[in-house]
Length: 270
Length: 269
Image 1: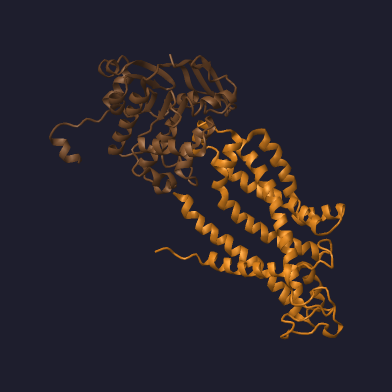
Image 2: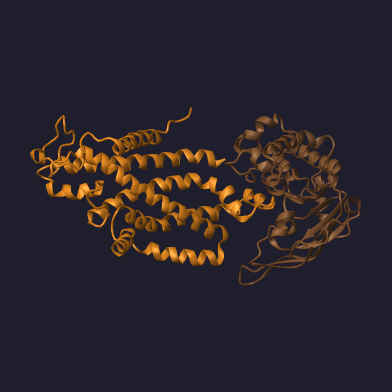
């Protein structure tokens, strides 16, 4: 009997719900997330404000919905940049080896040596903050880890028999790299994309927390979390709700990547 | 002469001391001929075959001599030209059918790859030819196999698929690098029969590499024996098997297990 993959199921469910809420946040929020309301300043959880209000009397639930959108965009953009460039670099270095490998990987090592947050920090302070700069900065910081994973997979695959027979049927290197090998490393890539997504969510929160990430009035989970810490005791729901949302977002993807790993094993083992 | 290997030397240079794996190999293969290349493991059979197929990497390795295919030297010709020959004029089947198919691609796609690379046929025409080819290698239900993935097929079926994809462009030379080693005996016989049929009907020359001498004896007209990177003896299969000139060849032939009538049959089966 086939064992059910609870990781994948649960992760998928959580991620599905979070995605729905995020999508909803782009089009509809119960209250205007920017609208301040002095009367409701730091009011607690109630039926009208299901997550309460923040220090300006803004509805936290609406802001969380909006913030999820921002965080999601930043994380996706980051992962996209990281994956595309990481895969390209990893594919070339892993497949060809030799001098290309040496040069590119040493550059990656240098990039890798910086903590990714620090690298993003330098970038942001050079080019200014804002959503798109954060995406580019984090994206570049994520390239080395992706290229490393992809490189390893290409090194493993390049001498396999099916790659040899592709070469023997006269396929060019590019065709072998991206048509023959790439689909084979897809599960590995997918689960590292998910982990990368989580790291990007955290990195964005970290950058914003330091005050150099997403700028107000753009709501993002990190930005909300950093302002929530001032009211940790007077309005604990503020931090709990934003933090909880972020945890759910990350948990969903983590579980999914774990589940994918388990699922992937069977199909590729044969 | 279709293929002529002259004075082929292959040296590995990826360690401190260069290592010679193939030295002074001369081989010839004419159209429609089946040449058996025999020898123990590590005698350089596969290296020679890989060199002919153009599979050896261009660095870390020193290669001298000539491999003439239709008068063109495969060792020195530009990569683009080599690529045109690979899959179209020279094809290879490997020993391990389990790993020589791409696990995430459908059989139909993989079998048609050489056609896609070497011809400008339309999608529909490619599919038609692939199905014909799958039928020709005696796979049951080609339509179904076309959409299946390698893990759904048995070893023998995979080897048939390999043969189908190697033969799809109608190559002049088929290099079979121990194609039956990983298969059990009944399947072996079927695969060999299949190769024989392609040799007859399509006049494909086959370079059959094996350490199974009894198989070589039944299949090949000419045999070359390799030992430690050198060809020690060549000749027609009859000459070599009946009157071996070299001690090494004689030892190899003596190593073929024989069934003595009556007593041992019952014990072994």
